[in-house]
Image 1 (spheres, rainbow, N blue to C red):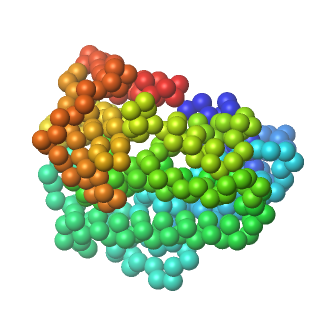
Image 2 (image 1 turned 30 degrees about the vertical axis):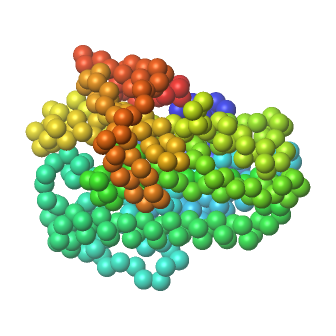
Image 3 (image 1 turned 90 degrees about the horizontal axis):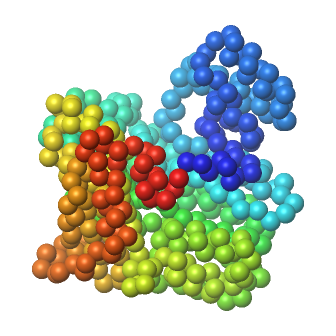
Length: 387
């Protein structure tokens, strides 16, 4: 939200663009009509990179008219090709942010580099189970399209998890290939590889990454390759840190205030932790319309209330304290866990510390049962400080 105001050169809608270009044909057309075609042609002719824009417009039109739905839904190869093209043209220092979505859902088929594809009936069964609301908000068995191949939700999610691991391996392969082709880049530049969230496949009756603060959802990869001329090139990060901490530290890099690996690592830890040494993580409930879910007789109200919560977690080396506020109340509940890399165990006997004032305010401030203000995307982003 609003990121376009601060990015000099965007290259979005990459799934509809074969060639790197700031211009997105998709955003210039609201419907398929003669008038819109004339308007698009005018945009293509009057903008720079006319040939590239023509190719991209033709490709986007082809995708739209023929509804091409590739079995592998991601575009990592193209993303890295565009990245190489863009960074090779630089003449001054720059910050480049690239989203590689290959490990992301939907989980349908095998990546391009893998030799054997899944049989068509299996692909259709995987697509039939994409809507995880069925599992999370009802007590229904898998739909017929899923049960024709899988004998239950557990085996279905197991198949999805296998594909997820294949997709993650594909992202690793693309990163390795990019690294091998850009050795000078890794010598001269600061490269940060960071995951945004994990994925659950039935752990603790959760799927996806909605409101669970399970380790499978919040323990993400972080790898940093510093410039070759930085002092102390090797420095381990051995305490919990956050994506926000990484972002704040990078701001100091851009400002010229960090010039060594040690300074970067210390900055990441400093900005990640509060005054008591805890990393704060939060979950803001699903993006589904909560009133619409309650109005649908198919969904169970108690399951909606269980999922539709805000959570704040205080993460330390030895424990995690989680505070939650159900969507339609101002009640704050708390639970403590011990964490390992792959699991968490509840510690019911432990007294959780009092919640801080700012976290309490964030948990309940948008509560408004009359108009469900907490459910609007703008209100949620504003409460989190994004807009």
